[in-house]
Amino acid sequence: LSGLLSGPIAALSTAADEIGKGNLDASVEPRSKDELGNLAEKFNLMVSRLREHMRFKEELLSTLSHELNTPLGGLKGFIEYLQEPGAAAKGPPSSERGVAPFAEGAAHDPAEAEKQDAYRTMLDTVRQMQTSLENALSLFKLNTQPLSPTHCSLSTVVGDVLRLLGPTARSNGIELHGPGEDKVFLTADREMLRRIAINLVSNAIKYTPPGGSVRVRILELGGRVHLSVADTGPGVRDEDREKIFTRFYRSVGTDGRARRIPGSGLGLAIAKQAVDLHGGKIWVDSKVGKGSIFHVMLPKERKSHDRA
Image 1 (spheres, one colour):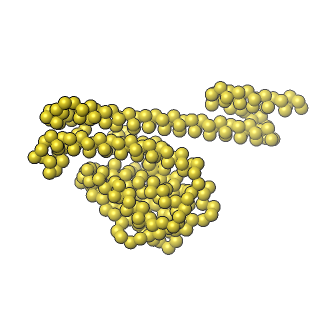
Image 2 (cartoon, one colour):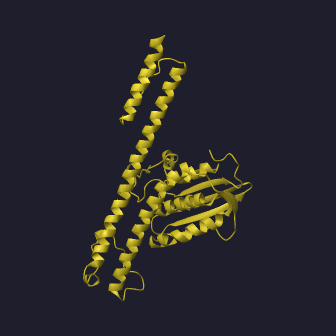
Image 3 (cartoon, one colour):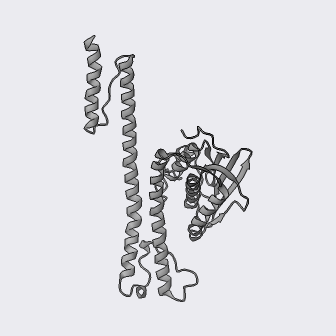
């Protein structure tokens, strides 16, 4: 009897020591179906979740390092260029630095046009880094901070987001259409609504080619509110429709490779998590080559047990 009790406990102790040393591959084999066996199963589940969290942390750090280092390198190059004596007189920097064409209305002054193009590119770079950091921080906030529901206008939130992202859409040659002037209210966490709208609209802009359009609509459907964001991008394959809402997932192009689109791959995962916390639903309708429509359905009134 003593051996039956001490054996599983010793195994748990040994595995716990391994975990303490950083070996997250340690596990315990359940030897019975009693309380000790149940404890061993819970221990293994705990270790599995620790591995998942560590893997997520490593992926997050790796992604952010890439997403920040790349634009920082370009930003550094532009700053160095602008600091050079007589930089404007040298003409445009190398096309490898990603300078856009001269701004309209400034062609008569090449020096000023060159300066404005450099500043605009630097600003877009900073915005890209800011979005990556905000998305990373949002993942942690959604898991640790309680909802702060208020009676707010989804139309106003979306309007603010469209004004924020409007310059990016215009610079990419994309038409951005808003939902109109009608006010649609609901009880929800305003900041989370903002993150949902930002990630859906910015995602649509990223995947829409120049000359395309992004259209946002808001409808009241009884006790629910329906938000949709439609784009004229490449579309989503049937097998990717669920996967695109997971962390770091990149949809596959026609060549079978992940699309090389700027961003951390966290936006849709954050949107889904925020929607889930409100007791809502998010999904996508899409056909390859025909664009996509992302849908969000939220209850107008939040129930007391929605935060779970």
